[in-house]
Amino acid sequence: MSTDRVLLLVAGFPGTGKSRLCTLVQERLGPFLALTLDDRKEELYDLHGFADAAARDHLDRAALEIFFAQVRTAMDDGRPLVAEYPFSEKQRAQLDAACRDYGYRPVTVRLVADFEVLYARQRRRDLDPSRHVGHLVDAYRPGDTLDDRLGAPQLLTRETFLDRYLHRGYGTFALGQVAEIDTTDFDQIDDDAVIARVTSLLERERT
Image 1: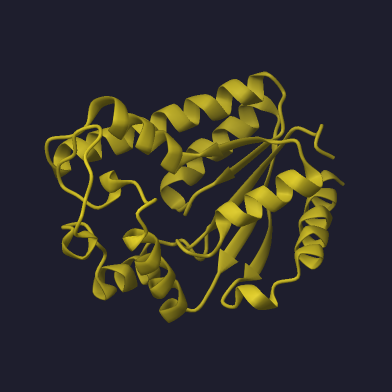
Image 2: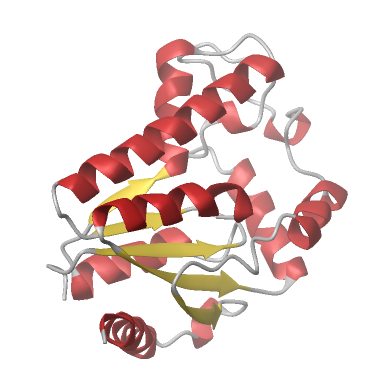
């Protein structure tokens, strides 16, 4: 199955466990070439830094273009891909066009969860020292650290997170066949059952 020309999109709200699912898919169904938009953003933050929020927005847009270029390059090589991000309609057209141009089958695993649970997870993630500082500040120079994350200007408030939860379309994104998985309670997730659903999705899309 991993030799198919497939683009597996792991989509859904921030905090739903997309990275964990990508790791699980690699272990059970791989190898896939894994692409993550946040990785591209952080690479650019560390390469260039940014002087203000507008400069960071420029880097974020550049990261998106690099991501799309990497998707197309990998497709030209015929490699199976797994990509994770809170995808929305903003990225759908370009992903669809790449699949059409290179004869790839897109499939989507969309992760959803309760708002309050997701906000708590996002908060813990932002406060974790391993979270890249560039996501939390308005200005960044490579190597900068942040001692007071609670005072960070880009630390998401509950209101901002709720607005994104309701209006950005993270919970409705779809490209190709879709399997939706509720990850509100990680302890209740059966990895074997999840892999069975992903496998069924890939097989169904192939027929």
